Length: 380
Image (cartoon, rainbow, N blue to C red):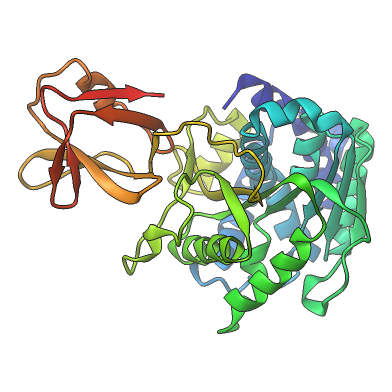
């Protein structure tokens, strides 16, 4: 993650702490402005564990207006807000040359919550941001935070489940972070309903605009998001990131298959402290990310023959090393003997999820391709 994203998040920290303390009725003047006290940390960690369990384990809080509860909203401000800010900043940063025009664009933030995605958009140059959110308390916090940092973001009440129409305007950029997985979550027809709603949303996207859609990397939410991707493809849209392959997602073919993005970054100290106190195991940020647009647009993926690494390094019982990769022809494995001596093996052994590679002079194998001493491998 570029350092500028982290530095901008660190500038938001005092305001997040201040909002947390004011919402909990704590004496701000007597507390450190840049860190949590020990008691605060223990309390926040407990609320984060409860909120995380309700969102990721038993998922009993999915679809509920949990942001109206002070403790959980505070946990969101200090834990999920920074994570969503980093994730959305990463997604916006992937837009490449498109990002040079952000200042003149209109952006929509669906399910804005207290505004992490809206402020990420503003921090990267977007000056016209509209956030739509169901929780009025979250809207108040988003407005207050935007006021404190001087961000001219606008927030409005919107309940997608009540089939409320979206604002009658078009947007150059639409971002939906951790939003769709909470819609119709207990319905057997949730995928159809989400695709129908998403297609309505896409009608508000300008011809040369982008949708940034991201959700948790849990297997269940990941697979639901892959199905959203496929639904948009069937309705004439294109995946610009991370996919080269424009057919039905091959990760859905295995019963428990998944495909997600991983951000390798140094998390801010206060966030690491909450993670440790909550007894989470989180080294990198994993989430399901898609950037989509209209089919006739030039995509973000400019590599004609590249393949994207979509797994971590694995080792078979025979000692063969392999990754899953996905290119224009779909998903398959690239493997090499563990004792192979070749100049490219240093690159092969240090590949990360979402890297793009090219290769030649490989051998065909049962489930993919194999590297030999004569092969060539390059990280693009």
